[in-house]
Image 1 (spheres, helix red, strand yellow):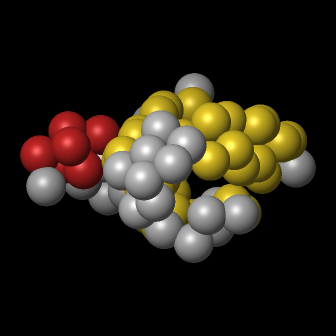
Image 2 (cartoon, one colour):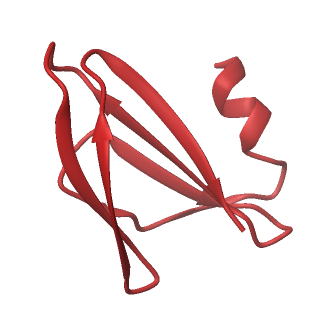
Length: 72
């Protein structure tokens, strides 16, 4: 929970995040920053593509991980 609350600010809104991994969620903070959380429940690394504002980014998710990143 600390991971989420350290990035999601009061007043943030959930936004759509297109990702091939079903365990993903994104929020837009009041300052305009976007925070994305993605969970890989598999034991193996997986590659996925995230689409946000019509821009695609390919990333590799380590096995059994929860990653977060912030976009300004």
